[in-house]
Image (cartoon, rainbow, N blue to C red):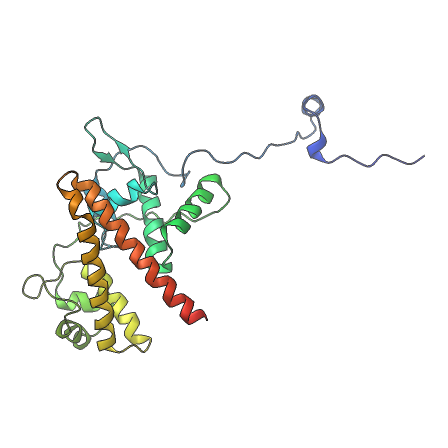
Length: 255
């Protein structure tokens, strides 16, 4: 007499599962998806003001600004809690989520739609990402010397002087640069190391500045009504310009 095929564990009924449990046999386990937003292992208690977040993250991402935080909030990517007065308050989990978004933009040039899909997958447990939260004890510098910019940007003082002569970067005060200049220096250095010409780089920079001016002009009508909404609109326009530029370059190079 043929034996019946053994049933898969998914076919075990709840009554049988309970009987197995009482007899000491291992019960079936239901795999549940994580709840809430990623990272699930960090505290979601809102305890950090916008200034606290900037102090923690700006050294790694010097171009981060309050308007960028507002834009990411309005885009649904990093959504902090609000106090009764309307001020944003971030949790340690929000800060790590913010770092993830900024890394995807800076290191991989991913558009916001792709980053949102990645975050959805992280939230649902379909994608896994190590938590990289780091402590930064010092407040970000108000200004960086030319020597500090060259060192942190991985270029020589002569290259920095060339970038300055071409109008790509400029000190804010005598021998003092805003920390936000570092992103431009690092990107410029990568372009030059890849074989790019300094004058061609200047053409790219001028084109980028024109797009930034268009973004500001696009948002200008909103400034009289809602400054926060205007800054979010300008940031969204700028991100769209970056995505369009990246898509064209990738298409041409990949083709």
